Amino acid sequence: MSIFRRRGSSHQQQEQDQQPELQLEYKVNELKAALGPLSGRSLLYCTDGCLRRYLEARNWNVEKAKKMLEETLAWRSTYKPEEIRWNEVAVEGETGKLFRASFRDRAGRTVLILKPGLQNTTSMDNQIRHLVYLMENAMLNLPEGQEEMAWLIDFTGWSFTNNVPIRTAKDTINILQDHYPQRLAVAFLYTPPRIFEAFWKIVKFFIDPKTSQKVKFVYPKNKESVELMRSYFDVDNLPTEFGGKATMKYDHEDFSRLMAQDDVKASKFWDFDQKTTSATTGYAAGAAVAPEPVYPTAKPTEC
Image (cartoon, rainbow, N blue to C red; front, top):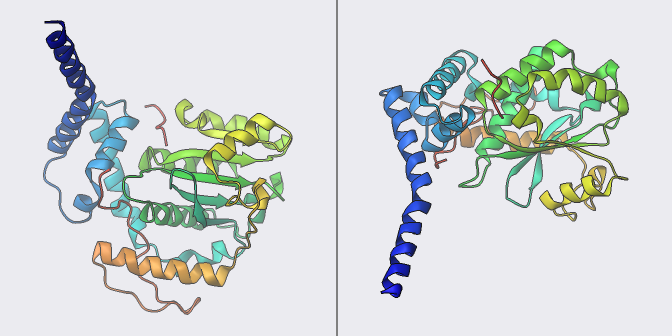
């Protein structure tokens, strides 16, 4: 009899283990029903993985997640991030201040590299547009089953003279938190100067506490912070600028070719007609990016 009891207990434990996943699936279906029939780009965008992210961002409250997602759909219908083409923002990338890395982290996540000290333009709107383009491009290149990305930020050359204004930082944070929830796995800030701490204290006020916990400061002399970063990245892939062994040199022409290829890939996802060849880069420019690969997947929102 004891054997049967153990089997029963094992079966009961298995059912209990399945309960959370079933509950999450129920929440996804509940949100799907609350949204009602979708079509066009909204239908492509609202995958199960997308719904899960918005639910998680709102602590699995269906009504709040619905409101947040509807606001994103409204934003996307006007901002049209999927229609941004590389040739429209290429000037922002000439110095390599922001680009998608050729390597991934240990979990296979797409990596964005930011070098704010290489700021080369003054149009805040276009700087945000450039970031949005690369956010969407990073998502387009996520492996199946992966929803998050990683950021590496190099502060070489950064100062208050080339720093973005607080208002622009706030606008950027709002876009990332409100319309790209649960996309950031971790952001490593490598050797930020002490003066940055004052700026961070102000910016942190606008960031959800859970998101701010994903931001990690790394200093070469702080062994614990270095080991944490290396737990996310293979040191052989990590560029020397971040304490790794790899030599990395940003080539704007090569990166432009890569983005042009991704524009074509994204245009197929969205079934866009190809636009004319870029007059500035000479490369074919398709639709910029797909915000959500087809695979599954008021308080500040967690990124």
